[in-house]
Image (cartoon, chains in turn brown, red):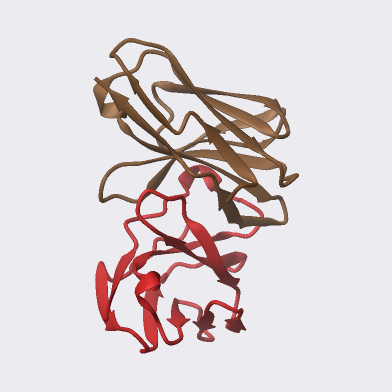
Length: 113
Length: 113
């Protein structure tokens, strides 16, 4: 969905490096989410934000941090990347009144060597 | 969030109607049922959401019995392009217990010519 963009789309990095994934949305939604997906598995929630001042941990937040710079921007950081963080990362947004009607970005494929 | 159970995979042929059932025995009074479609290396796409009885849109229908312990996603006259993974989510429409949100592994629908 072009309304939700993610950068970069692909990234290869080395173990121990800090990396930031960025997400922007033009849908005007208050809520934003970061998920990761491993091959053959469903999506797992890393962090979510209900508004600029409200950030919450999801199921698998260890090793990650986030920043909600504005309503439209939500960044995910890997403080010290490790190989098992190799995955496909998705950002999503939703309106507060339709929480589970989420709109996903195209994803970032991250490889940690 | 209510735990959901779906078949791991289903096969169909072009032109047939496909019904994918999701079990959610411990659904709560305020929970809604939401279905997503995901193609390989793309973010999930919202298909349909419902609370009870029947909901229909231009893509699919969602049937929910009176006890709401299951739901069925119905795809009319599938084509090869409907080959994808389909996820069933059950949760509070306004986001209660979001930290426990899990997409699960979904149902892989394979449509044959």
